Length: 155
Image (cartoon, rainbow, N blue to C red; front, side, top):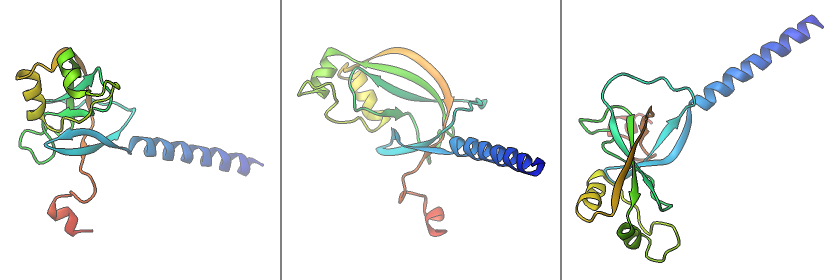
């Protein structure tokens, strides 16, 4: 009986460790746009902030269907390995009219790069900066098939 209890406790502990590890490595596809590529990320509930510079991650409010847009991405010289400072943008009435032509609450097309977001923000005033959001660490992960040549060759 004692062995059975010990085995049960050990098995439960291993399951908890496995579940914790699996949660820590959960991949979230379609997380953010960077340089015209839609990247995934690894999600974790265990936040341990890293020191150092952060990149801006634009998060859009007011219409559904627009994913976040990253200032930089993997391969960029200034990419800080997924250390983010969130900035919330809200669609202006002009922005809603331009992006939601059929007035259903969804953007008809997505902004896919930092330059595109800056263009619509500064040249057309389709967005306004609402507030600075939280900081978090979560590296961007390349979509399958877009790995750098050295990693693709090792498969």
